[in-house]
Image 1 (cartoon, rainbow, N blue to C red):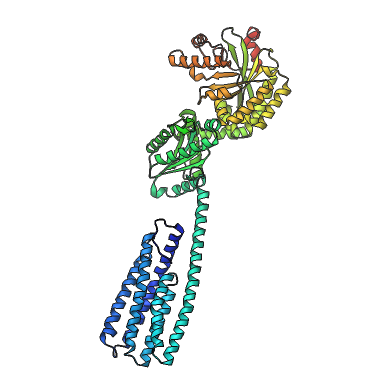
Image 2: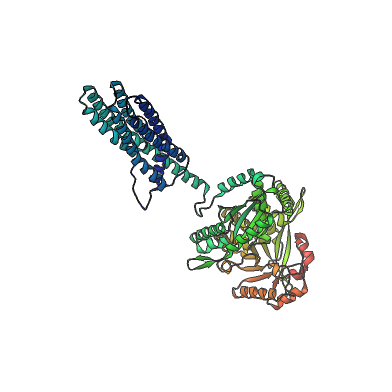
Length: 637
């Protein structure tokens, strides 16, 4: 083993050196025990013939050194060493080994002159046995073994050859040849040992790399989804000893537009920095991972309370609100977090994750940009969700679903320009189910496409009975924008015979943001068909003028949330005026939703609004009630 000073340490060489030291530490105490036993027996056989200095004092010093080295290596064997310490330990062995070997040889040869033929044979046996023991016990530390061999064998061989006695000469020649053969074996073993250690290191490296690939996210280097659930299982197993913990699911709000508008390279940069910010905001007992896409997860351990977990999550949300620097500009996002405590779900990792995910869903709808802790009210909502899901899976769509229509009115003339189709469901098992309840359930499966097409077929048939100037407005889900679903929708419109100019399809901002490229492609296909396209609930989400500019829109529907306080809040009036002006400048129709009072209507008319929808004009109507309720005057051109 070559030892040298170097500023840069090869990790492989450092690991190999430590392996040599570990093997040496296990074997070298055995060598010193052998030397001690052999020295004691040799000294005992010469007590009556040699001076006490040689028979007692000299071996006592050598045995004391051996004992000290046994203790030293016994302590060192189970103690981890860094690279410099390992080098020092082996360097000491390389120096001390030959010195101690020469000391034993000198002592033994000094006894030779006081020995009879039998005792001389004992001395020669002791010397030869010492060499063999040193080589075998130091096979892994080649330099140390060679040092002892060179310090003992040449001198002993020369001593025997110069005695002039044929038997001693033969022993000397035999010793030299056997030692040479053993040195050859030493080199072969040393090379094999090195190859074995390097092979083990490579195997460990590959194993570590496989573990990293299996458990770390390749983009952010955070633990991945697999590692998160493994850690969650560990936390559940240790809840008795470490106390309760809190699980969180984090979703980036507004990330999708960054991918759509700046490209995936910019999106990856944001994800990497978001992971770094989350890790920096995490505490000692906080485990952060990336589940995939723009979704992260966190485990707050250490008997953290709900209030403490909410505080941690708020700091994480704040950390993600700072702008992200991108090439040529910056982008801002926020994060919503769903949290659940470990004592909510009876030790089930799956239930913990599902409830944290539900709390996240609630946060994105009600407290976007903030954390929400799963509560008993959420548990009730989940049960309701599952009940609706079960009822929907077995529902007779054509029989149980129906349509109501709410007019969109020109407030200045009182004339109905179009009617919006609104889905209704009465289940024999779940009763009357609100669209706010059954649409999210349907969107989790392919059922939404079937429901959309079944209701669109019915709406087109109803609209065919209306006057030609009255249009139909129909809502599409985000899942309805897929190429396959869009082909079915276009096919229904063409087969209906209804003039496409009488038809407007509405999509929400959320649907457009989910996959901008898909939304743009689908709406272009509808435009090519000749139908109109409306952006529904404008202002309710993260409104972006980029969507208004890039999407093929004909109409914008302003969310009812801006109308609620318009009678007493000047800010609501100013915002509404700005959106109406925006539509006018972009030559887009503007529909105000949720108008319920005459005062609201008058204010909106004063702001330049014409098209309105709400209970002031009419509640949703069944198809057969439309002529009776609205009257021929409202439906007249």
